[in-house]
Amino acid sequence: MAYADQIRRVKDYIRLPLLYNHWYVAGLAEEFDTEPRAKTLLERSIVFYRTEAGELTALQNRCLHRSFPLSEGFKEGDLLVCRYHGIRYTPDGEIARIPCQDRLPDGRKLRKYPLRELGPFVFIWMGDPEQPDEAAFPELGFLADAGYRNMYEALDIQGSYLLMQENLNDLTHFAYLHKDSFRIGDFFFDLPAEVKKTPQGVWCNRIDSHPQRAIVALPPQIQERVKSSGKPVERRDGGMSVSPGVFKGYAPVYVGAEDDPGREVYGQYIMHYLTPETRTSTHYWWSISYDYAIDDDQYHDFYRAHLSRGFAEDKWACEHMQQLLDNPTNVDRDDLVIAGDKAGMLFRKVMLDWVLAEYADVA
Image 1 (tube, rainbow, N blue to C red):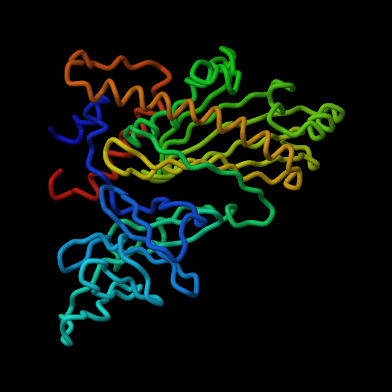
Image 2: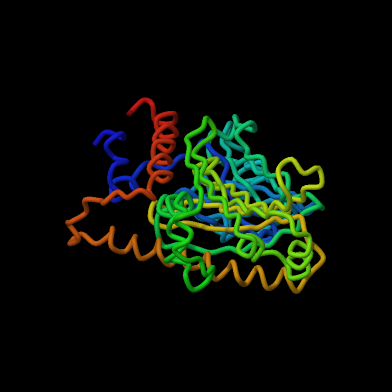
């Protein structure tokens, strides 16, 4: 089946090949210490550990001798020791010692994956380790900006990451999937919306100018200040999948008209990170970075719990869809396309562009 045909139906779309020439989240920085730890990312087993100086390294998780998992070994200083025959590897993946012989093989080394730590996250380049595309790293400086406070959570989804990407590019499900958590009603369908394909990806956005609804996610003290100002209020909920594994959302609340020199902005970045474990299982993290009330712990804890409940519903929906798509007896799979699918269908074309860029030889 040609890739262009493969994006037409969900059951075929989620079987697109995995994309390696991108940056993905490997985990939370706090997950990794000096003890070897294995993770499967894009169907590759990788071992992570920190050196004595705290530098994180990521190597292919197999001894070059007999493919014993190095994550089952142990540290000897900064060397990683295979538990099977004691072969030692440096943090760069080079063989440092083979106990049963003096000669070391020429040119043999483990694959080392480029990493970047930013804020609470560790990102990994899954493509050619000698040529990581630094320009492709998403603009996420707010994760390490002291002017923002971060909240985040790690989840695992027993479903394709592409199901979750479509969920994130679909703003119409809020009124029903999240009716018990975010409590958004049918009014959501009447809000001004824009969906457009740009050189960077598919941008989807909704604008709510209702004075009460627009400020509902802000802390009570800010809500009262906004109400007493008498100024117009507007909340925008927009976002874009900037890579196969990163959805970057921005949901600011504006207080005051656009031409008001004293216009206030309460900004928050709503981030989703999707790293395939396999084609039918996903490592998932979400984070919120906001620049208001950053010292209010009570608000922070309340808002985090509120969002956690809602994003768990997205996980729940994707897992149910994957179960049906995996069922071989479910043969009636012609998809109904509705108006709310516009952003998701446009994103499939972006995915197709990425696939063709990486697999041009077989396209």
